[in-house]
Amino acid sequence: MMIGVDLDNTLICYDALFHRLGREMGDLPSNIPIDKTAIRNWFRANGQEDIWTQMQAHAYGDRILGAQAFLGAVDTLLGWQLAGHHVAIVSHKTRTPYSGPMFDLHSAARKWLEVAGLSGVPAYLEETRSGKIDRIARLQCTAFIDDLPEFLFDPLFPDVPTRILFDPNGNFPSKHNSGIIQARSWSDVRDQIEQSRN
Ligand SMILES: [Mg+2]
Image (cartoon, rainbow, N blue to C red; front, side, top):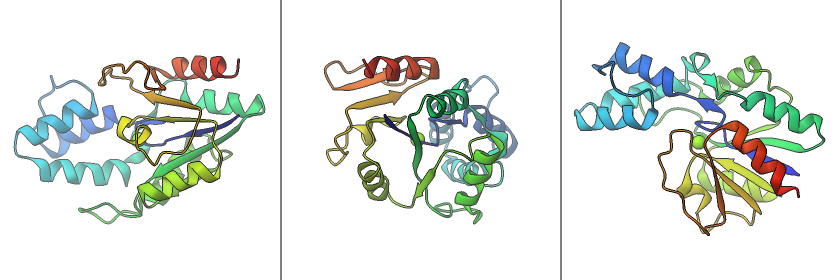
């Protein structure tokens, strides 16, 4: 198989880092769940969208090493490689943040991958969404895992037989007959890939 994997919020879990940054940089109450979406919603609802923007620059930039891989994600990727699958990380990531401090987000991401032990997995960091779609098509991925339903459902998304929506916090209602499989954890992802081979 040729398995493509998204990077941010699929492989790298930013929830705890955003919670920490929200407390350091803003007034995030400690009882807000450790969930990126809940944290973003709180900043929006409290008129602190500018702080949220700054937090993102730091999370994907100079503070990225404070983010952990999702449980089981790294071992799963390395296990697939050992089993003879091709694995590639394909991410839509601008070189610098949309605003805020001008960190090099690509070198930050590559540093994270190196520290995580994933230097042996090819990583394609694409500046645009269409660049990411083209890359998935050119790699001829037979499976792709991503946390964004609007990306997997994009009419331009290539014809990838196994599309897995990674939804650890259960934010999306399950869509039956959509052709998209939902996974709540990396052990779910591993099981789904195993099943798709049969
Ligand atoms: Mg993502």
